[in-house]
Length: 401
Image (cartoon, rainbow, N blue to C red):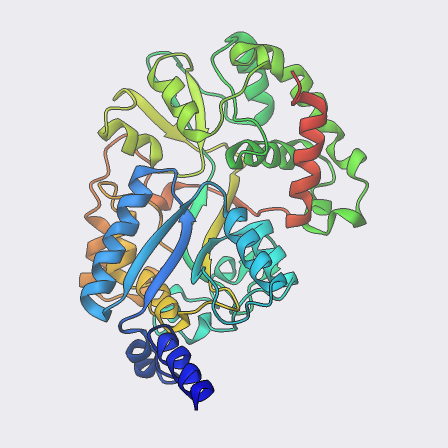
């Protein structure tokens, strides 16, 4: 009798986290099961605008769906991945601490490859069709890997250069031209150290522009001659570094520090992975109003970022509901609004009615910012297996300077 009583107490303690059963094919059952759940969303917490947007999402999903959305701020997505890996190793198959992850690239490859993701589910979201996936393969692919319904898109990013027009008459519009410009203006440009995300992004951007074997970058790195493919990159950086800020002996920790150097006047030229970020920084008085943005003539690296649900998430119904809300016209328009974040939408405007489309036009962009439709050619991300070898090779060559 005592054992039965203990079992009942334990079962009752679990009820708040188990929620109701749901069927993906019955979306109403998903939102019903989500009500009352606390969803722990592990997402990068390094930008105030991004954090403010996630706070806004939290308010909306609480009002509409009765979900308590908690933003678990991480410095690197790998922190959340490591937690899920540790839970699996400990045999935690249903009580995971992570319900939703802002995921991309090598972290998606690692989680999918180790069967750490719940799914497939993305195609079942009512709002997923608004991305017009048949016409936009980028929402179905993450760093060359098919998503297969294990992630849901929610934003776009692309390398965008920016400069102070009072200091720069004509900015460089190719990677070779950037080298020439840096030599002519020593100390006025730099890039973040790898493995900082933006630093590794610069390595990939340069490598795509310089190597004669770019097709190899879209296959697993083990199938290529790494030294031969990357040799032009290291030759380029060897020539570039003496002309960088602090002669390439020190590097910014990331995008925010590089932006601060621009704001302080230490740099005249910089870059970001968020096209709207320079204009947003002007509005926030972090950059001068003479700041201008542009894309390289032959295109720049870009991708779609996603959210995913770990296989052992406690609150899957709540996570599904949040992911679907992130794809709503309301949430996407709010995210693209420069006064909020400025992150570009993944929705196809032809799928929206006139009033929904109008919301995307009222985004407060300034005359010096790049509208989403003028970003030029987007270069595909290399296969995720290239990232770690690139970062390791960079550290061996330049990390100890």
